[in-house]
Amino acid sequence: MITFQRVAKAAGKHLTRSLLAVRRALGARANRGCPACGQAVVGFFRYGDNAEWGCPNCGASPRERLMNHLIAGHVLTVPEQGAVLHMAPNEGSLVRRFSTAADYTPADLDPGRYHVPNMQRVDLMALDASDRYDLFYASHVMEHVPDDHAVLRNIHRALKPGGEAWLIVPLWDRPTEDGSFDMPPRDRERRFGQWDHVRQYGLDFADRIRAAGFDLEEIDASAIDADTRHFYALDDRLFRARKPLAPGAR
Ligand SMILES: [Zn+2]
Figure (cartoon, rainbow, N blue to C red):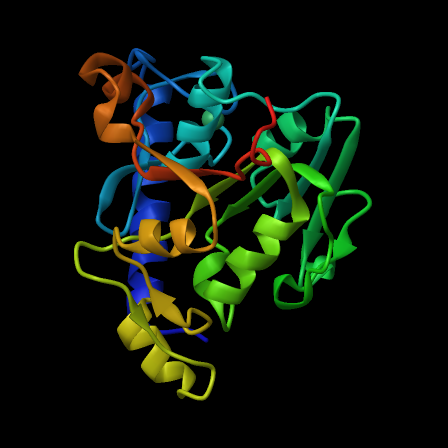
């Protein structure tokens, strides 16, 4: 579905991306860095309201850069000997990082949309695995599922005790508003920013995660020191949910 809003965002992205290429060609210093591709860059290109959204070299978004920064800094650990379920794996740098795990499953409701080897079809509404994964990763997925309470419970069950779900969703500064797939796509686009979103989350997403039985740590880019945040143009917020160990376990 193409709307004026989306065309305008795409045009702005293309324009600022071109300007970065021109600046680089004219010899501008590459005094910023991208933690997703490891390259020095002259700046980042705009997307929508975010003037420093994308890496001109690899296209990484602020959330993709945040994840790479947290993993590279050992704030987050990829379970190398464990099992990883990676939903909607369209961030190449994270496919590279997660696929080093012994048991890596890239998956989506519509696996044909991805060029990642061994894509599996997984419907999170029907995910019935139990104590199976050490890590579950889903960035900008939860706003697409019909019943996120049910999906969070499914993710909780699918994780091993001590396993973690790393969740990122689009956020606004108001409470979460839920819709449904019964709404016309045009209404969903108007209310939730995209035709295939069925809700818009606020910070109370945290309450839904805890209600599913998780311990939760929230890692916001704004808490990272200002120089580092500026250098990598980090933004966004990670909800790091951990399935508690069984009572009495250590
Ligand atoms: Zn990059």
